[in-house]
Length: 409
Ligand code: GDD
Image (cartoon, rainbow, N blue to C red; front, side, top):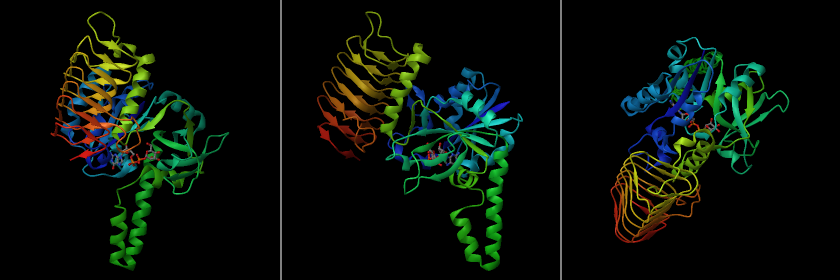
């Protein structure tokens, strides 16, 4: 048997995702009309002999209750949310729930970061891992040398694929091969994590003999049960014939900012085009709007037949799109109303917002720039004919004049 664990983090981790993380946990934010965490979960479904999927985080249980029960029914695989009482780090969280994870005596455990966007080639990784042997195999990808420093950089043996060297977010360039945050491990991973805490405890005890203050300083920087997968496990185990790499040639992105969620929404919509085309709007028939490229429209949304939408548009539940509206590259969240002839480009429109007639909500579409996409928080009102360009607008604001390059608090 095999189990999968998805690390979803908690409310203190999603600060760069504001103002969109104010009223929805980041893992449930919709990309291509499906919760962010839905994409790795549905990829897990392709793993042979999958027994269970666990989501581990420190969000409140009630925030995930509805989602996990509906996804369990849909996929016919038990999906459980396990809440940590406090952050234990990416490896500490896994270790904290080791008894539950080992319930089905799995031979392998997949571990996935929730905030990455890729095609999750999990069965291929498992097959590769079986031929390499060792304790674990991680998904890796080549990125540009300029962007590599935001990730774990690594060196792998070109023939055996063994992980030879690993440095987390180094200040000086090591390699353009980086860690994708997707792993498969044998249960030996628990012994490795335990080793880190024991080692720390020994060091602390040693210092305790020397002075009480130094014990305090050790536990302050590293509480005994806080273990990071990258620095504490991958770095020390590199070059010890324990860890191997599997390189993907397909797409991969990290989703830390709202701008990246718009980019990743496009990547997942494009994936639907080949994997599940029934999820995309077709635009066929005289009563439906004109659809350009990949578009998702929730069945409860009402789009006027004279509207033109796409490419890369996701429309959530109960949205109303009026006559003559033009939507390009945007995510429209639940219960938004878009009135006649409004134009929305490179933007995310928050829940229950209202976009006035002949108004424009748009941005340049530079996903990495701070104001590269326009974001409207929950219940923002853009009045008729106003233009909101390259702005971030916090919840409950009313805009009756045009604004540009501003953060509206
Ligand atoms: N449950 C739980 N508890 N989850 C956590 C905790 C914790 O205490 N800390 C982090 N996570 C989750 C995050 O939500 C995320 O999904 C994943 O673990 C990794 O988060 P970080 O440890 O903050 O690392 P990162 O995202 O900056 O970088 C990691 O991922 C990159 C790929 O996206 C590193 O492993 C990099 O090397 C890697 O390139």
